[in-house]
Image (cartoon, rainbow, N blue to C red; front, side, top):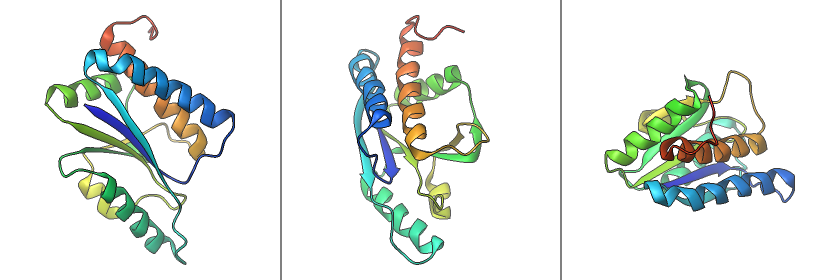
Length: 160
């Protein structure tokens, strides 16, 4: 199963981008052995529309263009379901075992995500009740993807 990240906003060069890239690279190297491969980070510019609803709608349209019809869509939202690392790994493993070909994790823009995306989403996850900067969210997602691979592979990286 190919796993990608969709993000509204571009990550500038610097330590955050380097750290996220390091975990995505680890995921890309370790994942194929257990049927998970890193596909890409799809970055889109934030909409310049004059109001939040239009911005969210335009950003959602950009996300829809990156998705296949049968892609699994996971939205990140502070009101979503909180899971631990093992449960997240098991979710990925379940989607993989169901024969899903593509999975996309989406980080919305500053205004959040368009309501239409919630209807399309297979899962809405939260990384905690606090609001996180987009740069850190990318790092957290990248690290959790790598951690999920190690959990599914029985590697000692994740020690509970």
